[in-house]
Length: 198
Image (cartoon, rainbow, N blue to C red; front, side, top):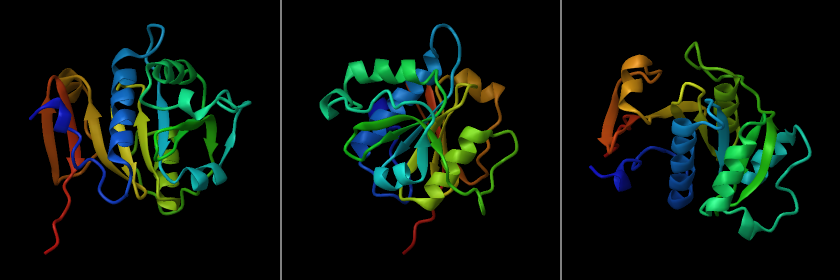
């Protein structure tokens, strides 16, 4: 398996743009590996259905991305990656359109957690990710301060990306079996196994 196809099948239900999702995952993995300014940091990316996500969230500070041209805010550009890494040090979520534009940063997710079940030990960032994906058609990617990237879809944890194989031994997975595991170029992706319907 190559690095190019390791993220295949990570998201189960949504019609999320696969190229945008892949870029967000790569950025999340890089952020998990590197941190910022010598320290580990967390982040939350909510991808797709951005109008509904914006309606169910609010700015924690004046939005640093507001009024900048969309061409400067595209997730595929190096400058945007560096901007996201800097802004990730602040509190709040990034909202990414299906087209790959980071439309807002530093957002408080205001979605109900009613009916959302998470494993103990996952924090408020994970609860926000699960809650917003339950109420919208969005998918969420969480960078944990423990350097694990988790993907939420339809209110549940569907994948965990462990950037370093060493972390797999250090931290337990929160996914319950059955799951699949794929390894490529020093990275492991563990995904909930999807039942194939005939």
